[in-house]
Length: 256
Ligand SMILES: [Zn+2]
Image 1 (cartoon, protein in one colour):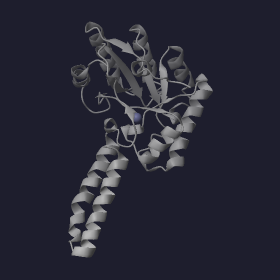
Image 2: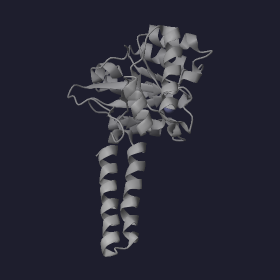
Image 3: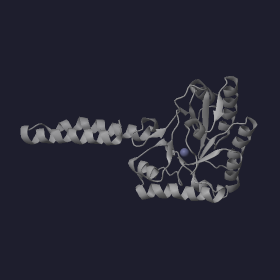
Image 4: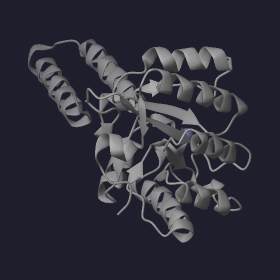
């Protein structure tokens, strides 16, 4: 089920109802049901990145080996990104950081450190605005290009990984991302580490879902994530899970 097939089915359905109305006097009230279903599918498909509704997104790797990838969104963060980097270094674990362009200014040294430590950096839009999904095609291209430019200026690499803000995909976002040759990266374990849940609850939620090929979504923006990360890395070690970067797990390239 994709956006196009859903839209075409909807258009055919309302055309048939229109014809039946014109020739046989069918009540236009019959439009309510398909319209409601269409709207519900649009909302579902846009909100759930794993649905691949608007765009093909990598959300896990279909593998049997005990390998998982950690991803951190919304940095670079002056306070928490260095703490995440230090814990990852202690565990010799790589990760992928999806950074927000507007957070880079003033935090260039942190961004540089992410790269120097051997982690990969992906695009997570420039503004991460709540209204980002209402942008037109050019608006989305600007979001991606501005962040790409900021990252290139610091690490000299052109990113190929993109994680949509809020995991929401739209037709314009998909077009911009495809046009600029990004791989869209989702996740299949959402830690929900930005909610009010305790570190213990978040850790348990992550641990019960860990399986080969998983991509875990964290945010390097809070103290809680630091606790959860430590426990998750210990859990991975005890259970013989190897931590790899997102691009290693998916066998794709992080940079041009
Ligand atoms: Zn985000």
